[in-house]
Image 1 (cartoon, helix red, strand yellow):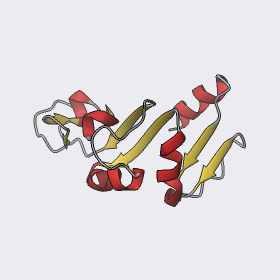
Image 2 (cartoon, rainbow, N blue to C red; image 1 turned 30 degrees about the vertical axis):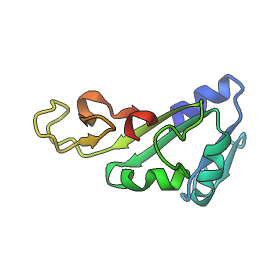
Image 3 (cartoon, rainbow, N blue to C red; image 1 turned 60 degrees about the vertical axis):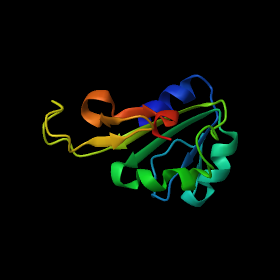
Length: 120
């Protein structure tokens, strides 16, 4: 997430990072909120970037406070899906498969960053 943070800060954006991790080297311009505040932050954010392990995707909708498809506002939202890729990104093993709204996609070939509205 640091490259996104740095690029946004260079453009003068206001940033709220949601994490329960201890982030001592976080820029003082970045407001840090606990994961329990994620649903509130998601309601007003102009841009949402999520970094999440693939196995945690099923609970993401609830953590964001979304009722169902189309409940994300007009802001842009992207999800970095962290998944094992034992094939080295060749798309041959399907271990990194991600369920999207319409079909399975491979994180190694089609991602690992997906638009939130592709996922639900």
